Image (cartoon, rainbow, N blue to C red; front, side, top):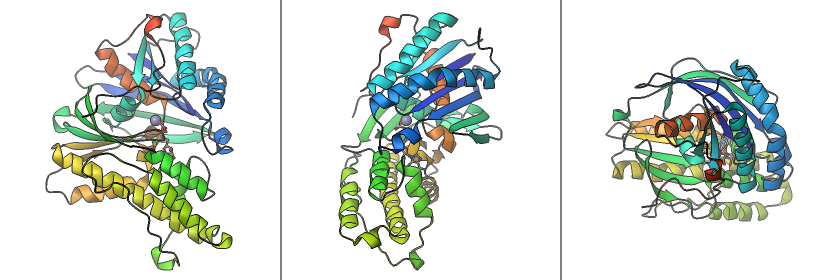
Length: 378
Ligand code: KG4
Ligand code: ZN
């Protein structure tokens, strides 16, 4: 079957066509996956303004759809799409509604059902796919396109798993007993980890989104050549629960920044040293809590998802630490361009909902759920 996935929960308009073949071991071919990023617009303000993002989604959706169908080799006027998956939450209400209303019209026009998808579950499930052929990833202007084939790994060796979902809006640790059976065991009490990257990048005068900017500046830092030795707190790293808190980190960065003469704090050396320490502090906290949870719950794998999962240092340190453990735990992380918001992850999550008959042609039941929660907290 072919599923169209539509993502508009925040500032990326993502549409993809994913073809699923095989029943017992489903194979997923991402026929096209186009993301129209609104980065340039939100860069000006250093954050995402919901009404501005909604307007951009309205503009982008028809253009992105046409491009996606063309790229997938699907006829635009009468596409052979079997269902449309759409993010219903969590996210920004006006943005979610824009995607939902767009999909309602398409579904009527194409006479296919709509599959509601939880954005966080989509970030989690895309990490379960294993790449089976080479990925060709190229950028066109502000779009990303991917061609690849995936299959689900043998679930016996994956679950229970601990999923670390780290994005601009969320930081959650989830116990995954199997697909569809989730318990949130910890989450942020204030800022999300992606938000911490974004806000500290802004203090340092770097661009938006902050994660890739901080990562790039940090990569240029070398301890031996630097006059700076900055130490930031690792908030809640040793607390007994699995919760996080990142707002203190932002405050610590601001205080350090303000305490220095203008010339010094605006120097490349300072920005790079600070970026490296911000990244290290976030990575330390995320990894420490995730590994403790993996141990406590006897996890066979750790699943990374969300935009921050695209961070090279986070992946590298995870791999290193996992190798020192007595029992083997596999790290499952999607290719970087499937970590950040995209339509393919919505189509993939949609497929699992479809299997569980969670789809509808009754549009009254289809509404935005800005505060949707993956599962009960324990
Ligand atoms: O999942 P996502 O695309 O959107 C949300 O659902 O929020 O995540 C966006 C977040 C932003 O905060 C961005 O700064 C962060 O992911 N991010 C990164 C990297 N790439 C994106 N953070 C750290 N390192 C990266 N390479
Ligand atoms: Zn996301």
